[in-house]
Amino acid sequence: MRRMMFAVGLVGVVACGADASEFWHFDGVNDVSFSKAGFADTSDPANWDTISANVAITRGNSQGLFNPLVDSGYTNAGPTGTLWLFGGTAQDVVDGTVVLGDFGEWQPAHGSNPPGTVGQDAVLYLIGKDRFIDIKFTGWGIGPGSGGSFSYERAVPSAGVLGVFGVAGFGMMRRRR
Image (cartoon, rainbow, N blue to C red):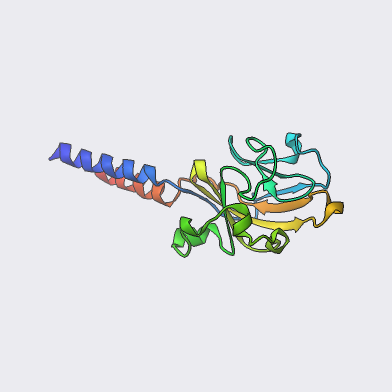
């Protein structure tokens, strides 16, 4: 009986660990503001918002966003390692109002209208990290004279972020002891 309880507990922890999504919500205190000035050098990491070891966000002097860690420039898919949802928040994912299937690559997600994203609630999904991040664009330079300027605010992890599934798994593990 004891071995069976341990096996059930271990399966529960492993199952929860596999689904341990992280949800970074705006808290109004620790949020990051990022901006890239027009015509800034995109080969300089000072002009990137580095979010993880594999994902950074920047923009060239025109067109959309790309990941300078792996992309040589913009493509319609947008920054490698990301999916996007405009018109929702990370809390909507937690609540089940939106699901991962609602996310898309950069250009289709904003309907080929990046200036229209300014002021909208949005979620950036980091594919390799299973991380949902609240993000809101605050500026988007339009036309050749803008030099690809853009700005946004994004959430950072709050203390003790395990993700909703990770927390459930931890609680299950404690009950089994």
